Image 1: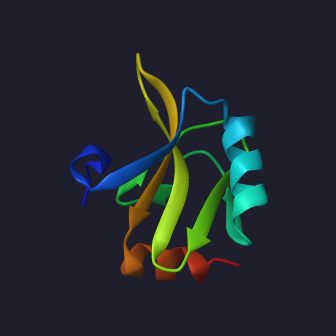
Image 2: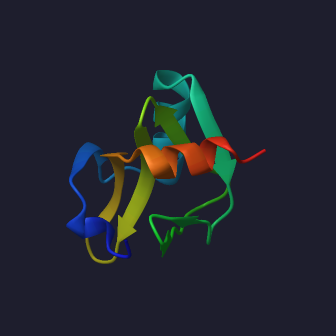
Length: 90
């Protein structure tokens, strides 16, 4: 895929800290995985303060995305293939 901005996404939080995003995911989604900065999602390396939580909700992937000069957003993207790949992480 390569460019997250070209995907149809929903913004759940704007201008949030990584802790706020992590807390939101853990509170609102029963299924989540913690990853380290540099983890590849949608063919893009994500950055952040570890641990970075990625939420899963059916075919949706919820994760923090930082755009330089704009801040950090918590995004929700529907992608069954990416959700299955992340679910397979131990």
